[in-house]
Length: 319
Image 1 (spheres, rainbow, N blue to C red):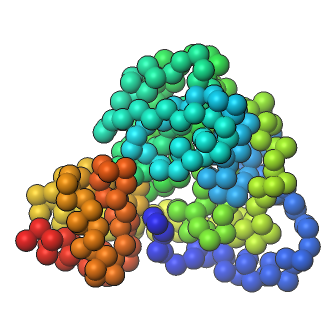
Image 2: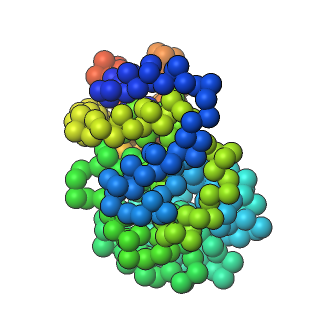
């Protein structure tokens, strides 16, 4: 499930414990305090920030607001496997553009007069592909002026510094660009569901009518604020996860397997007709990995002990 197995960040447990005595109160129902703090740290107006119940909920709100009633929504494939479901929930039509690596020109070519939104996952889940700033900027320039681009940066903190496109910089100069991020992966708050979206004021405003129904809970707000204060430790933990991810990749490459570099907290194994057999082999030993879109197997980065077991089972499978 691409969980972050690092321990809770400093201050998070205390914030949850302290907040437990106030869960019967409404308090900051629309997460105004969290929104203001995020805006301050990002250097943007609070009117451009929407705090929500994780990046998945925010993507759903965004699509509900901007891509309903049969509008086409274009995305790469393989990519986040819930994109088609989220688009369908909004009443839109998903348009998947195949490509490994992602073909941004083909993605732009798939845009028609009925297209309202393009979803761009960076780093891409499940392939781990990282798109650089120049190529994303060039891609945005290819799009019509009435098409919005939502960049899903759920795994950005696991990518090598400087390699990933700066989505916020693009959003600062182009009102068509929005960015969604989550506390679930890098900050380890998966079970609390909290994320945020940054967009131009009109684009963000269209999400606000649904905020009462996609609220960030009291404990999630407290934990997120504490996690923001633990920025340095968060980045250290993400670097440790990335080191483990790359160690596992090196071991799989030694087996002669096709494993591309990854900017997420997971690896993408392309085993062709053996994809499902590999999943079944690991499952028999109590290890769960995911076969996705018939294209490959996604292996999340776990504890060092779990990663050692994956390497041992992969060697056994290869033999």
